[in-house]
Amino acid sequence: MITIVNYGLGNLGSIQNMLRKIGSPSIITSNYKEIEQATKLILPGVGAFDSGMQKLKELELIELLNKKVLVEKTPILGVCLGVQLMTKCSQEGILPGLGWFDAETVKFDFKGISGKYSLPNMGWQDVHLQKDSALCENLPLDSRFYFVHNFHLKANNEKDISLTANYGYEYVVGLERNNIVGVQFHPEKSHKFGMRLYQNFVNNY
Image (tube, rainbow, N blue to C red; front, side):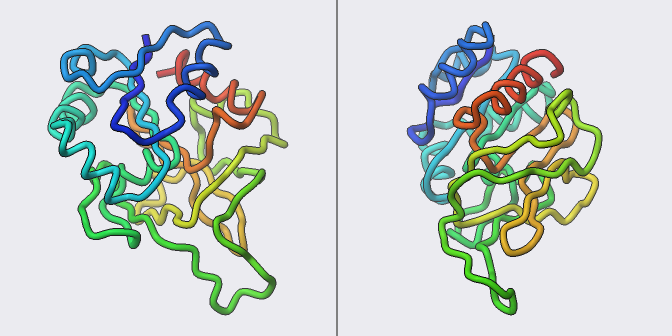
């Protein structure tokens, strides 16, 4: 059973529909006890960094998630804003993040970059595997995923970087360390590639 954390932001139904397609049961919940009993978690998210952290605080989920992820080592997948919340902070706001990765969330900066790049970065992009990852097992070399974002990940520990993409410059779109994985893109909007990624999370963690 996959537990999708509902803190008021995110494509919850889309994620659950994708999990249903691969035959994986799931629940969408903000209930403390249900999250406490979870064996696998998905932290989704669409919107602003501070709004996400504030909602997790209001629901009293930050301490619980820290316990589940850092102490019990429950596998968790962060999606879009969800992975950004796993970093220490964001240029988008002032609140601290969960800090599970030694990383920050920064705004795209195209100064000195030739070409015209608009924000948000929206559409399909190729991703590039940077290390062996159970999340990316058997993904085709031409895998493409759907993005919508103004801010991106900046990792201070290269060992945590699993995936990159290019939009004006190479930037981090995937982080992974042990039971904690996250992606900047939306697998639930990425057709067969996203379906494979969710299958890998269900089967390999």
